[in-house]
Amino acid sequence: MEEEAPLDPDRPIIDPHLHLWEIFADPLGLRAAQRFLLHEAAAMIAASGHNITHTVFLECHTMYRAEGPVELRPVGETEFAAGQAAISASGNYGPARIAHRIVGTANLLLGDKVAPVLEAHVAVAPQRFRGIRMGVAYSVARMFGMAANATPMRHMTRPEFREGARILAKMGLSLDVWCFHTQLAELIEFADSLPELAIVLDHIGTPESMGAYAGRAAVARSEWAPLIAELAKRPNVTIKLGGLGMDISGGIGSVSRGQSSQQLAAQWRPYLETCIEAFTPSRAMFESNFPPDNAAGSYGATWNAFKRIAAGCSEEEKDALFSGTAARVYGIDLDG
Image (cartoon, rainbow, N blue to C red):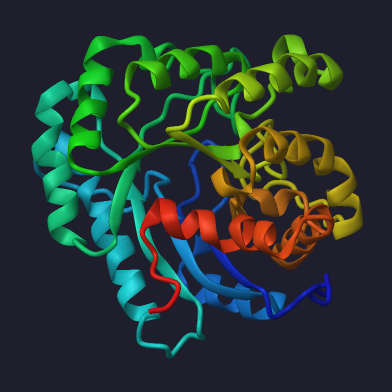
């Protein structure tokens, strides 16, 4: 499919949620092989025509160490992302600085014993490592074609998880959280318990669309919206505006609807405008969530959709939504 011409092509954009991975085919056929590394990401960004200045790498359970203590194996993902970032920083693959900042993962259920794991992440990427995301999303339905997993259920209520999060805060690191709207009340309580922790809600706290909510999007949205408004009252929480394009019902890469930016903007506007109103642009940032959001439309169409949604905002508000908030949260020097 031919890429859309970019709207407002000179506007600087920090993409605060871009994965890099190589997924190998599952022998049971649950997922196909996929390669999305620096070369693919750089080509995609160039083809979009948008002025992507930096991206933030988000953990995606890739390139873990094969050996050593289990709790330290995710440090391999930070090593991998830092290597990709170093290659990008050469400038040989375009002006975008890919994986310029890194959000890795660590098991917060280790409590205060998570400290050496976080220190190991920092040691391998001292300028780039900014925080972690640990899986807490739970749905009673299947996610990405895999069987429902109750393991993350109510992680945020567990005392050891909160103790691990306190270590994050003490180290000046942030916590990205992806959860469904049915877990937002739990996140609100968690945010209240750790006001010193910088929390980033990914994918607008995904309104559930499966199980009991299948075919009941209006019901999910009516539950989601007041929870977003309540969460926004917590000043330690910022929100990522995106993630609505991924198809949770099937394997990543199994669907590509190729919708236009007009179609995407029409679908996403009610959700994203609700978030912007609640959090204000100073605590909200557009995110691509690619490759998963490729299920809905191309990278260029996704950013065009965001620009259509933000068209009525002031220049100052647009600067925050497209780069300023992400720069502040992830420590990116816009003048550097």
